[in-house]
Length: 136
Image 1: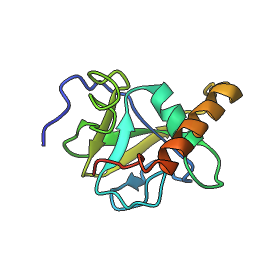
Image 2 (image 1 turned 90 degrees about the vertical axis):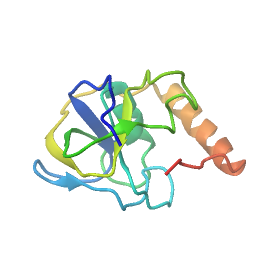
Image 3 (image 1 turned 90 degrees about the horizontal axis):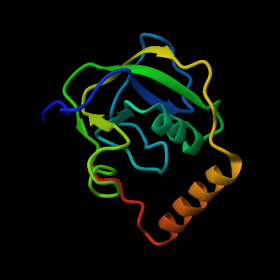
């Protein structure tokens, strides 16, 4: 595994988990989007991608965007890179090593309700068609 060549901090992780500065986000937990334990932890250098992450995350907790620091090597997220978007325009990455929480984005602009619902509907269609596989 190598470092993603174009990755530039800061890095973000959107979720509904209640975490604190200094906590570690580690692989081995269920995805934000489906019941599948993952051997990677995902993050982005794009605040917009992190907003999608927290808005689409399962659960009832408050939507949160954490500023994270990789503790080891990471690579482009193959679930988005070249599979759905040429290159890595979402600046999305994954690592087998934990991410350290170094802060939280206190204020951010949510996606418009109609756009968010369109995304949720698209994900529901993908799930119904069996096309929600995460490359792990």
